[in-house]
Amino acid sequence: MELRFDLANTKALPEAWRRRALQRLAGRLVDGVISVRASEHRSQWRNREAAAARLAALLAEATAPPPPPRKPTRIPRGINERRLREKKQRAEIKRGRSGADWKRQAMRQGWR
Image (cartoon, helix red, strand yellow):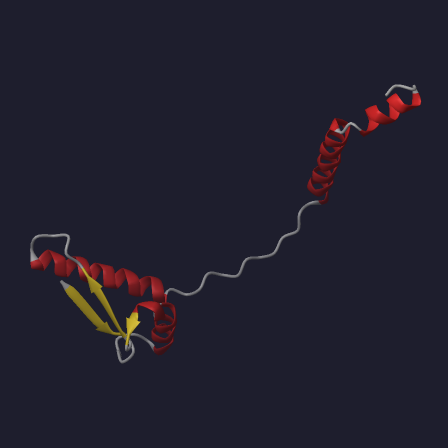
């Protein structure tokens, strides 16, 4: 069962909603018409209901207002300082793994 809805020319939706839906569903539209298919049920009636439910869900999602913008937050100073302190400790551990200190110490003592 295939259900088609002419989104570009509909008067069923307010103009702002229609524009928002056209913009959000642009990839699914063919000449301003959206089509939804359903074939999971054996009866045509149930497939028609399933297609109508899918179309309604698509339109509800496409016409929903955009989410409120994210309020930018700053990282607390204590958290940032802890991160830098741990980073320095990790760098010290890695620096200690290099053989540079062992070589310098061995050269001072006359080892080869």
